[in-house]
Length: 324
Image 1 (cartoon, rainbow, N blue to C red):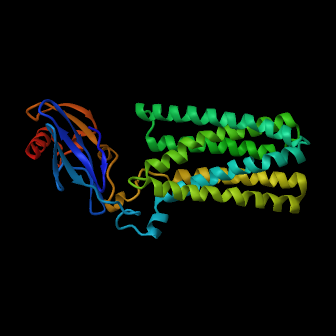
Image 2: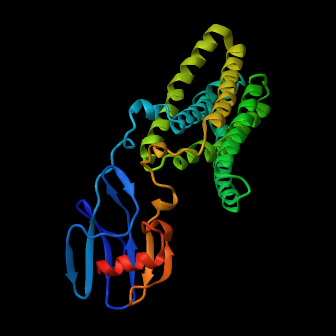
Image 3: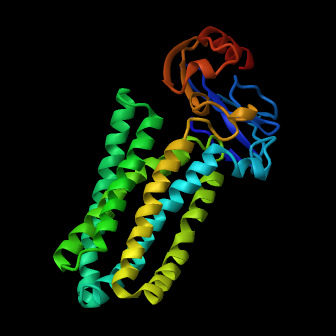
């Protein structure tokens, strides 16, 4: 049966008189996430022929146990996520906010035409993001390249070409050529989604919301900083050189960000060095199909080795049978 919330507890075991399915969940011990065999600690209720036992679920801390805010901000997972998100969004927000102005002032296009032409870039972005995400999973699952290698390759593969195309746009005055370059730059940048944002979730451990929110906060900074810098460039260097400086700044940020992200990104999960985070295998609850005598006859899901302290099916069956 699916675990159901009940206050600070969750229902962890329901059995009937015949073959039964047992839901093996996790509970928290102190501030640590622990995967082990079920232990009834609160109450037992009878409903018809079924028996329900509850295990205690305690609230998790905001930061990994034993980690300070300074250590969190200096963690490789945080640094890689912040730099990757910040550089990506500098390129993205520069095009999002400044393309209509560039097209109207530099390419002599109407704002309506510029807005309509920008649609092609975001349609391409949707396509590359979706396809790259799917292909990344295929490559990781087949073992051709490691998960970390895929994150580094997709981020660099999206950011470097996109940045170069933006740098070249500053020297183009033909509307068709400029729209083509910008469309490709926006679309190819979608490949980087499978790098930085997926990596943030890969290494966040038991604190994905904290790490993702931190990277997302950094990603919003270019949204207001880039337009201000564009205004400074145009006022100081004029129309032609000002736009070239704008695109070269985006180019430099994108390439430098891809280099730094590749150097800082690694497989160390947030809090793992403190011994407070579970491996990915132990984070998955499991479902075991038990025969009437309590022996395990089918593994429906999860990782059996993580569902008992010693990791053996027979001992897990004995533990569950003793509890019943």
